[in-house]
Amino acid sequence: LVQAKAEPGNIGKLQLSPTLQATTSNLLKEHGGIRPLFAEYFDEPKKDKVVYAKWQSEDGGRFHLKSNYNMIVEIDENEEIKIPDSFIWMTLYQIKQLLKDENLVSPHIRGIISAL
Image 1: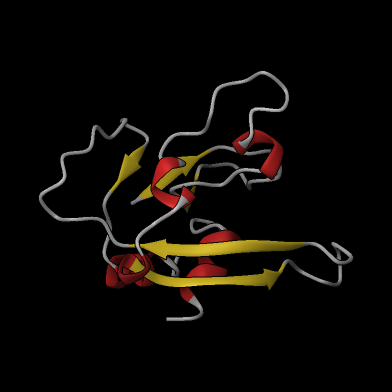
Image 2 (image 1 turned 30 degrees about the vertical axis):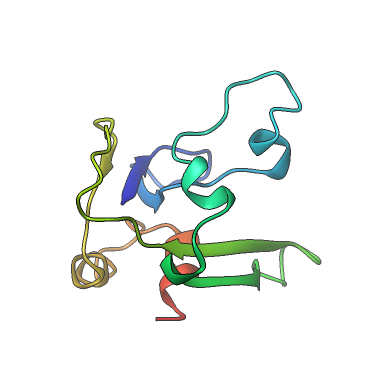
């Protein structure tokens, strides 16, 4: 499940971003906001459902000592999930095909799928 997301710095368009992309303070609602969508799937996933879970550095040349915790979690295919219009289910193959277009797939997704 990926998200079409507009962020400062994107070159003229939306980028495909991870299902959940949030800071720890956002996840903990430290600033009084609402919890990001789908956060519950990453809180305490069943071990047999975690495909990938690792810390990766984020562009060490620009962000000194910054790292992101990346996860891929499977959900039961029979589970019904309400998906907002800005989200879409995509296969790994589809995402890789979109990598051929410049600036369409976010560096966060690129980092996550690099381990697959």
